[in-house]
Length: 120
Image 1 (cartoon, rainbow, N blue to C red):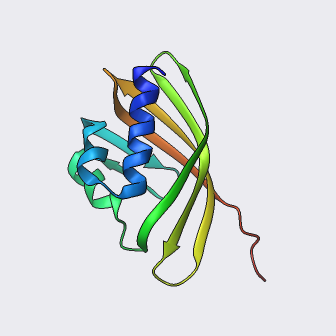
Image 2: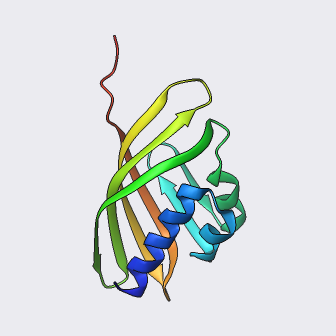
């Protein structure tokens, strides 16, 4: 496995444990995290605050289905399950696009979609 893919795998493993130090060690100091339609944050301090978002409780369950790499871009597809404080469990699929620099994540764009059918 390449250095970039190893970093992404380490990042995901650390997120499953909510291990802030291990997550932050995978990032550049000037990291940018963008979730279209939700937020964009810049820098490790802002990233650290978002690791345990106030809307969620407990640890997420993240599973990578596939990773592909070209040059300094790694794309990871997978599933994530997380518990909202308001009650319901979210079952999501994701496609994360990681821009890497020297084996660290410098930019992350996360595309998320809820897999539960809406109730009417």
